[in-house]
Length: 454
Image (cartoon, rainbow, N blue to C red):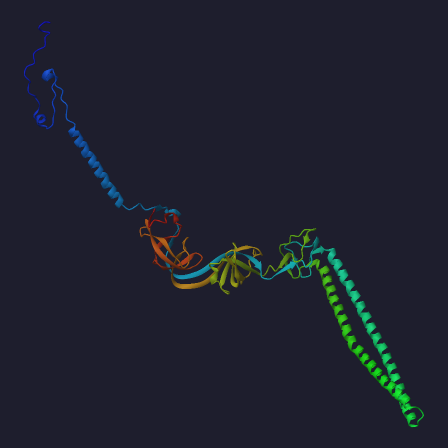
């Protein structure tokens, strides 16, 4: 090994040559390599970086806490509604007309229902719906052999009863004649017995006959007297009862005559007549169809005398009274009328109200025409009212959205409502004249107290 190859002897350690700021930084560690000052490798301490990182983490957590507190104190955003799809109403003060409305139809004031008194098979259909008829017009002809047979049997029974009446009258009169003959014979026998008794009484005085014979003559006279009285009573009894017996038989004949008349009417009723002058309504019988007794065949109406039958909801019909004015809308014309009758029964949650028409009927008015009727209940003066909201009922308390003055939002306010009409309702509390409310259904924002209008 040469001298150049031998390791050099390390001299004394040289002091660190660092900038002043680096020397004074606390905790700094300096590592010096084997190669002396030229080979030094300096590593910075990680404590500063950790401290800065902890500071940033603490600042971030503190910021998140502050933001959370601020957000919790903010009010939730109000829901919004589209102005173009909402209905608005303005509170007004003035005359308020209470009305109720209901659908209905035009019906004849006077209508005759034609029914089948007797069941039978349809043989002929002589008229059609819409034809004008008189009371004697035959509408349809029925046939029923059983009815005709019953009529013949009733007539036969009547004939037999009349014959029985004649026989009874002859028998009773014959009995009277025979009794009169018996009475005459008893009277003759009585006269003979009386003469014989007188003769025997004279002969006994002259002592021509014995007293016994005279006594027997008196006995025969007494017997003849009783027989004469009995026969007279029997004749009187026959004369008294003959009228009663004949009256009973005559009553039976009269009843049979009524039965025959009924059966004849049944046969005649199979030629069904209109019974009144007018116009034929619903008539849809076919030849060969069997009709049961009591079946309504058709209606005969007078088209010039019509009235309206309205169906008013039961919740609104309680204030409808006879005589209240009404307007009937036929879609093309309006006819004035007045309430004629209010049905006391409720059917399908509505009450039937009849309206008499007080004006001349327009050309298009006819039975069964669908109409709408409006009845005026009362007229109130100086009343606060508004258009009826979709969810407001009479005499109730509701929450309505009142529009602000700038129209940008609406606030929920409690409102007490009073009497109602078809399209308007009375306001008792909660709103003032000129206030604007939203009439549309806002059930989707029912939990909000304020909404924005965009």
